[in-house]
Image: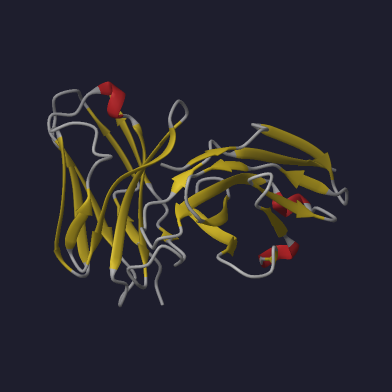
Length: 115
Length: 114
């Protein structure tokens, strides 16, 4: 079975532009997570969904960030407008069940650079 | 709220030597504990997890970890490392009430020298 798929793998954009990151979770998984990884702040949870419903978005840094999950096989993380401090690696992860003890399966990440 | 401290940002060791990566956590409730590994330019993958029961947990690639409740620690060990173990290792905690939010430590970069 394919793992978590993220696109694009690399994105370079100019400040002020809209950026959309995409994620396809593992088929049959009920939960989806978006993380951001930076040198300064480490790995931070931005938002997670259970059965396509957002459960906790307290990690979303600002209103410029938004995430959607229109169906069980697709999610997007959008940044509008982007700023240089948004430069980071963004990971999507999925897990089989809506439980705190389940393994999370991570995608390869999207490296975002905002100039 | 939970927090995780990984005491060493970098650990260099020689191939075939033993290694211990330290992790301490803080929580007012019972917790689930995890170790994830991140190889260069890849996502994280689970090494092992502690949910309950035996405090010694065995994981993939010969790693094991011991949960110590009194010291609030969950140190990761391997008796003999290989070049392929070069990676970044993350300790993580979630509350034992079932919430899915994982809090990660800052990571420890393990470098294996030949």
